[in-house]
Amino acid sequence: LLQISGQAGTVLDSVGDLFKSAMLFAFVSLPIVAVAAVLRWRTPVTRAYAIGAVVVASLAAFGVAASTSSLLSIGSLNDAVLASRARGIVAYEIASPLAEQEPVLETEAAAADTPTFAERVDELLQVKNASRRAPVPHGIARDKDVIVVQVEALQTLAIGSTINGREVTPNFNKLARDSWYFPNTISLIWLGNTSDAEFVANTGLMPSKNEPSSIVYGERVVPSLPRRLNDLGYTTETFHANAPEYWNRAELYPSLGFDRFYAQPFFGEDDIIGMGPSDDVLFEKAMERVKELRGADKRYYMDLITLSSHHPFKAVPTSREPIAMPDEWRESQTGRYLNAEHYADAAFGRFMDELKAEGVLDDTIVIVYGDHFGLSETKPKGARRTRSSVPSAASSPSPSVGAFRCSSCCRTGRRARSRTR
Image 1 (spheres, rainbow, N blue to C red):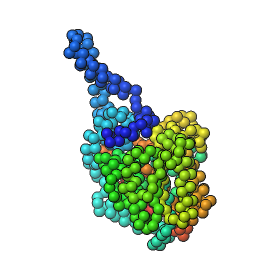
Image 2 (image 1 turned 90 degrees about the vertical axis):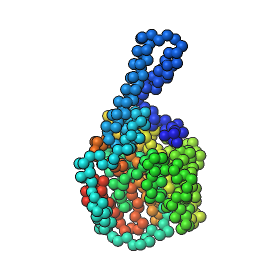
Image 3 (image 1 turned 90 degrees about the horizontal axis):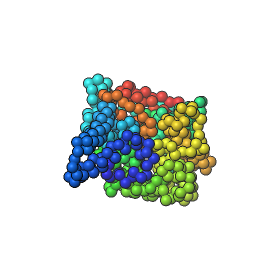
Image 4 (image 1 turned 120 degrees about the vertical axis):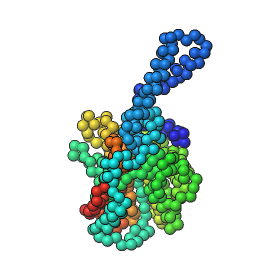
């Protein structure tokens, strides 16, 4: 917590959304009790004064203890935003180290539903051997340029959703239909949140459970996709419209082998949405680099990290691609989330249109995935722990290969099924 405390100013909106007025009592009461303890040695203590100090201290302790106990009863604190919103940030920080010591399988019933190692191997082989529209020739993507888009808080639940008959994410939907689509990708983030997703996607390694991976591996040389592509002659660049110190990215990206990192100063101060320049600005600047690299006849791997759909989803103005929704949804967390992802989808669509107009898509693989949950649901005590389901899609490297949809249900222990469309 202390290692990432310096980032609090960047996410004040999220902190405010999670903060409850009841927390003020706990914070205000503690200095009152401290002052009372000092005054106790300087002035006579009356019975009423002593009783008052004891009552204040007891209520504060009871409030924190009750919230912490309530959180522990949930059984799983994987979704930090949800848990913090439910019982408060202070209670979550106290409960989280205790909750992490619980076993992954908490009941006999949950253990009985968990496939054995042999069953999991068989399940994965079924996915590996699933039929596809056409065989994939080896090396079909050789020398293709690669553009990866990590979308802030994009969950599978947004893909294909409609409100009053209007698609929430029409551009992501189109990519899913025409590409290799994996709706049940599991987000493997831990304390590093978005930066953990970047670490996993670029290395294939599990993130650190005890510290943000961007801090643990920030000064190391990590085997990674960018480093391998560098060896093959690619230029590797990553773009994120936030401060380079946020999640220690100034050290993370060199450890992953990226040639260049474009941070907030590169994007300027125009069209700010929430924590930084909008996704439209991100894609515009990335498009400029695409043209420069293509003009120099350089192959490239470009990693784009969006930002505008960040929690608490209040930053996107209603004038920016608003989606009509029922009144009861408009100011709700769900409504704000869907509108934020609707904007992120629209900005991505404009980027794809320009890539197509410039002929870039003929020689480029575009990969899109969500980094972590945006909305979440509580899980009953005893349920198997999972990470949120996020979508991932990769444009097909050749029209002859066709589209592919993996409908794996591995998270629930059922046999995986695959189908093409």
